[in-house]
Length: 344
Image (cartoon, rainbow, N blue to C red):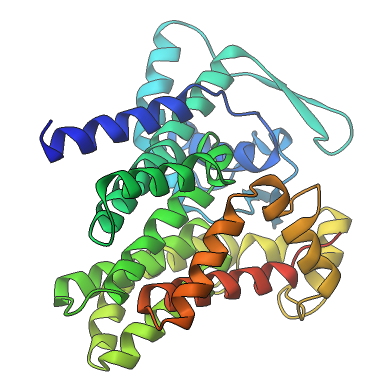
């Protein structure tokens, strides 16, 4: 097989695996889906009429909005245009029913499941397949083809990236976009075009999951430390997606820096966001331990193979491997951020 055919086959294999699973209509995917539906079906950014499908929602004035970063929802719009048209022609409307107080859970029909699944495929599913391909190509430059295949496959299928890749979350797209600045930061002489792509990657990742802005800036800092003139190209690349997200925030929440998390309505969420700075606190030891070893969401508990990855990063750091130093710095930053946000 030629290299191109191999990569295509590999990407299709990963995509087929994530496509096998139907995403659950839980709050986070349903919140993103509500925004996609609002844009397509109502020509609006407010999710009025769909707000009872999720508890992950924000309210400003008389209108409801998704509290999630908007990029995944907006990327899914073209696919939902086609899906919604087919459902209209076949007279199979999307329907949900809220159960319990404050959208505790929802019951959905098959049309809802189908449309949510397609939105998941064109965002998280494609991102997971692309991550596998990009990692394979990058690792093949450092090791054997078999080693690159094994490591990229384990990364996508044996870590939390796999379940997130099967549902309408922002994690897989954000991870894909962060690969752009990471690869540029570890290259010897990146072109101006590559630097602009890296800047766009940082902004787009933040537009998928807000917290990824910080590790994205950490990676960008490594790029600028080596070549200060790169700052201009990074900024130029980030400008368009950053302005796009800022415009969304302004329209929905009144200012570029305002997000849905500043307009939450559930008392528990409001209380959590009111503490600290924008809901951020100093990292807590008990939360850090739970994020790593806890049975509920502990990374090493859920995906023990990541211990091997950590060992590799530590060894690479000790040897002065630039890629390992940058990747470990970004990962550690994300861990500490989450340890200051999550609550046990």
